[in-house]
Length: 275
Ligand SMILES: [Zn+2]
Image 1 (cartoon, rainbow, N blue to C red):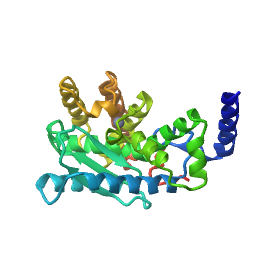
Image 2 (image 1 turned 90 degrees about the vertical axis):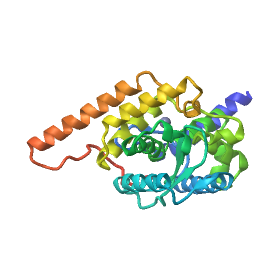
Image 3 (image 1 turned 180 degrees about the vertical axis):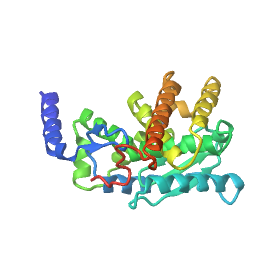
Image 4 (image 1 turned 45 degrees about the vertical axis):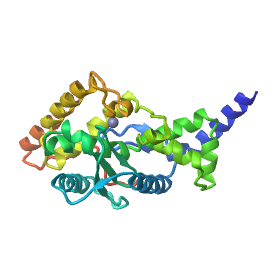
């Protein structure tokens, strides 16, 4: 009976929020996200500050500057006026990186072993930025809410900063290590982040073929225990999917060249702020 009640409450919320259906950039996939963009940005800001407080941020080195330079090139392409971009290199052996909503990007020094050049660094940074742009964390929190009888959602609706909400949010964005639980992204979200990421790095002027090399390097490290794969399942089809995305980009470019016009990304709603 209790379950039925929870189910009905969940359904009512779905009906209430169905008008807020979101669309992922580039892929235009419809998403059910039961969290406002502003709530998400506020949570991202808070999580970011908390994370940096606990981390050793590397400043002023060649690598720290590379992260910022690459980051700002990608940010220029993303063109989101509501994002306050920050790109930080953090001292950690973990081969990992993340981007929180609002454009808060952290790259761990460990990933520099797999990302051998700027193009490969741009691959992982674009991929993480794509997760944030496509609101994958909020999407996961939203499905989590439904499963939990929308108790957490109640807190969001009331605008409260409940600790359980912050924790769910952190887990959803791959910051779970500090909380003991890591939630992997779904296969669909992974390939979507790959697709959006490749478009971003391409538009920012990076060599998309280096993305294939980067994921090969990452797979090689996976056997010796790679933290990245605790939040990013290593899909055997990832490289094959990326090849398809590259082929699409090249096809679009050829068509554009034939029309003697500048190449553009079809169906891009990157710059659009979605509530
Ligand atoms: Zn990912």
